[in-house]
Length: 249
Length: 309
Image (cartoon, rainbow over all chains, first blue to last red; front, top):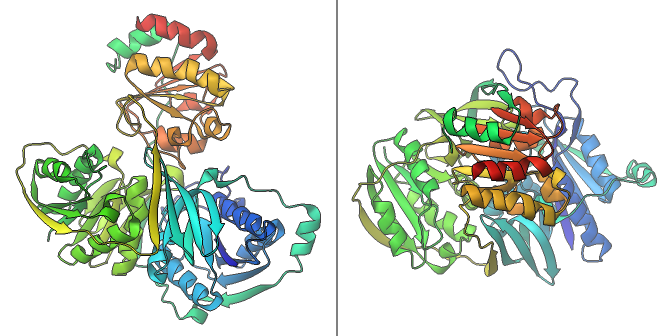
């Protein structure tokens, strides 16, 4: 079974995003970049499927600038077999990302696309679902457990108010939620080995996909800041203030 | 032109996220229709018809749409979308599950988590966990938006729209197996007027239950947790408030033993009043708290319970 794992290079999740003074976007210069945390979980799950003998090949794909190659290397060091970089120096919207991934899936013919539920930069939570629609493959989003049995996958999903289990026919698109697993750190020998693994470099034009943005970003601003309030001495004073001053009790 | 709101429901009840999405829809158009997807959900359709200012309710019934199967819902919605300028969907886990599919089917670029309607084609949405706000303009013929319910007031009642019944689509290749819903008498986290949240300082699931839950019950509040507490296994995942969990904006948010990571603040900073109890005076949570109490929760929470009487 072949597994395709799309990954995205984003601002490290411990770094606070800063808005550029000219309101044109978020400042990415000299900021630590890492693999999107949900993508890491997807890579981990794919590698575990391979270790269990369920998957035979794990192909990593990323759409982004030349530096996204580092993100692919990280995934290869975790256990991916080979990579595809679709180079683009401009931001690609989720719809175009889904179209590019659909083109890659048509070429690679994976049995499973395993990807993060959302990227922590755009916070769209859209590509997996759109890819499923475009391919006409079933989707299983927000997965906290994935079990493959023959040509079917049983997926437990995090839904409003609890958990839901669905069964999908393969090929399918599964998106990973936080609880699916805890990603490993790549070992030094594996990081060295990953340097020799193959990464094919492509352009968006190679797939004949129109990546022109549909949305015009008029401005990016900072949200209104909350200012710190007052410190209270004890619980009694807190309750008194909540009753009289804030009027919320 | 008219806009369509997809109702949030569990086949028995209409959730108030629907009313809030209707408010966002009214900012786009004077002609608002509601689509209820469900099975045996006639009562939900009847409740939707009572929302003020709604033109008509379409009730699409079917087993797959009733189980929330995304493929069936998106097929049903995109079949109706042609008659509308925009489709608005509450940004819940369920809504986000099918909304992008509708956009892909219509070849539109979806706009997630709208918090403000600037005009009929321009919207504001948070990015980077709410650390930045993006104002985007779309030229798509049919716009597909998910609406963050906490950013809009609920539309009132008093309407008497007609209800039209139709058949919901079914899906192939995907089967609903089971669901396990958390049963609780507490209010739902995203709809609660008061939320009491606990963090990693609790140290164990037993301590979390012993400290946070009685206080929440005393206040009639929902229970939340930081990602750190959830990751440590002290609280179930659906308690999680933050960028990767639920976004809440109650009248009162009480954070206990939560340091205030960026991730967590993203999920609660729009609360009206924030209270923080933490023994570390330098914890970032105090920078957003209206009322801060620097104290060990072990002594502060029992005192708080006593002071509440």
